[in-house]
Length: 182
Image (cartoon, rainbow, N blue to C red):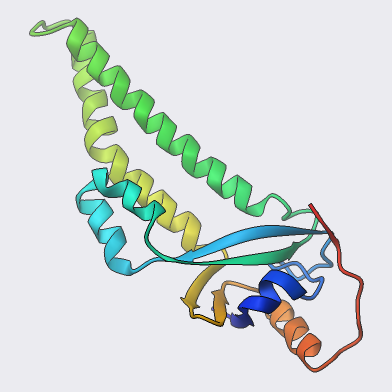
């Protein structure tokens, strides 16, 4: 997987070449994106003990990158975030429906109680690990940080053409107007 190392100051303040970070087409917008690098053991902790999920909010190195994106990818990270939250909300709805059905029909042989038990297995036992797998899949099939240091960030999943545009810009290539920041 192609990787590029960017200086923190360049990524946050100076700006990157006006080439889409996702597909290498000409960029039309710049989006601020916070990249977070967390230790691997944190994901294991959340998988084993999913109530530890709020720990993910506080642990990890963070870097803000002003990411150039084309018209097609300008909502790249928003779409991924929306997919994750939709799956998490769906899991919560299924788990809540299970609890309600089991509570309404205690000890009965009513078919809706059986439905509540099935929904409970799906929403309470299988749901959280499936949502975690979805979150990791969304994270590692896109652009993600492989290393964050005090002075730089290394991003994986970027196209080779973007890496070449960064090299040209570092060598003092021709100045190209930056896309508007939105």
